[in-house]
Amino acid sequence: MGQFWKGKKNGKGRFEWEDGSYYEGDFVDGMFQGYGEYYFADVKKFYRGEFRLNNMEGHGEEAWEDGKRYEGHFKNGKKDGEGTFEWPNRNKYIGSWINGKMHGYATFINGETDEKKQGEWIHGKRARWISGVQMLRTPSPNRSSRK
Image 1 (spheres, rainbow, N blue to C red):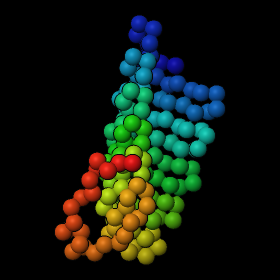
Image 2 (image 1 turned 90 degrees about the horizontal axis):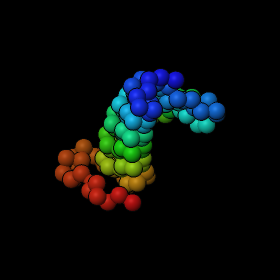
Image 3 (image 1 turned 90 degrees about the vertical axis):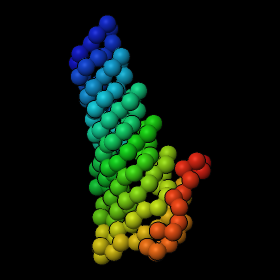
């Protein structure tokens, strides 16, 4: 449903799949391009934000039915850049992402106690906790070390 130009989806519109998933937002030359909202019925996840060439790209927000939330940057459909992830228990990761995984220096906040810790994550796993003094002296991880 929506606007068409020369036989392709262009402008505002909505595309629905049989499983209940849908995209509603901007189209350019038949592709998701600009701002839109996408509901993923299979994983019960909702994304609202920027799209480029059919992918989540730029700033956006994800929210899952179970209470998980992410707000930050995306590249090629994955979390990439700076962002905040919050779990249902209110624990938070505030920091860098590469290719959908936590990677780099970040702040972790315990949702029960509000205790904040600084740490380093490599390819989705916490490598170590670090003190504020170490954080100031340590260079940022090399983004070219993606694997």
